[in-house]
Length: 201
Image (cartoon, rainbow, N blue to C red; front, side, top):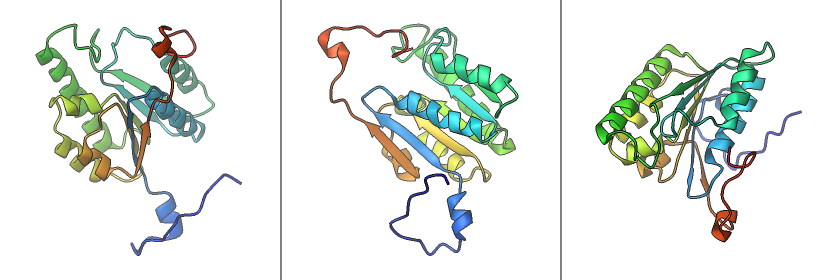
């Protein structure tokens, strides 16, 4: 039997226990510490195991940066074991440092990425979405947070959405069903150690 937990209260919302349990969630992983995207990809592994189609939208990390989770999920998605996986990259060679290209280019890429997410949500293309580092386009004003919340609130049923990134907007946090905030207690970079294979990528 899978772990289920017990809710602290049951709302008077007219839903059955089964309907409430299976309601698609909006999840936000935010905070200053590493692990936000990794946790989202861990949820994607669970979605893959359920046979759900998965769409990953990588908004900010460089499109040239090959993250370990991308390779693993693509291999799994191409197998006959679980769900399919499609990985979208929003820009060529731009990252959260915003050093490459112009802000106009970055903003246009982010807006087009969001337009694609909207099209896929409307068509129910995927059952599980990872909008990786999507808090940054909202923070920088490239994508309107009120529109994001409205679209996600009104999305067709059955689509789980996980958004990652630092500094999640309070409006997004308020709209989410589950919010995780990573906090740093200790990090090897504090002692001058650079990132390493198998840990950072």
